[in-house]
Length: 177
Image (cartoon, rainbow, N blue to C red; front, side):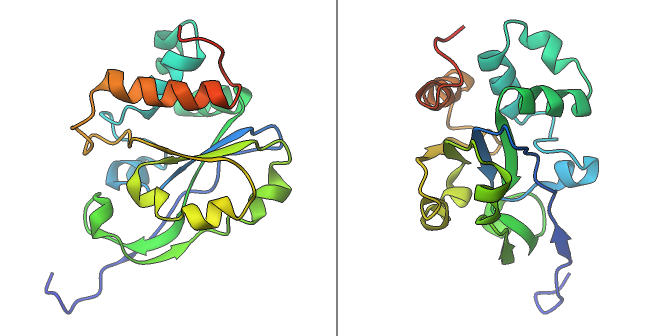
């Protein structure tokens, strides 16, 4: 593709949240594998689901072995919702640094849709660039290390510890399992 050719406009995934959502995890925009599968954190090396299962379930392996639809329902039952800061963008590949001409999601709609929302956690730096918009909701906002395989400078344990801290602060867990 030459530099003058337009990149295709990609559409993001719909929000996964409900009236009982207490913590919303905001990513930037789904990667190629996630868009292909139509699943949040669909890349097999993304550590999001492993982190959530490790922190929120006494039997992480059982959670991870379920279907995506069952994992989504389980996550929602834990009070955690998922969405991205961008509704659409142009991008080649999966790297956030390649995102161009992004259209943000309407985050104001969260207050109506999630009356029990107590905090927002940005999954990675690109998402956190929108902190001004999420802080405008009047909730605590946290920056978490990206669970993406591109964030190889953080070990799994270091990511787990950071995510544990936010889940504990928001009251979703009381102690590291």
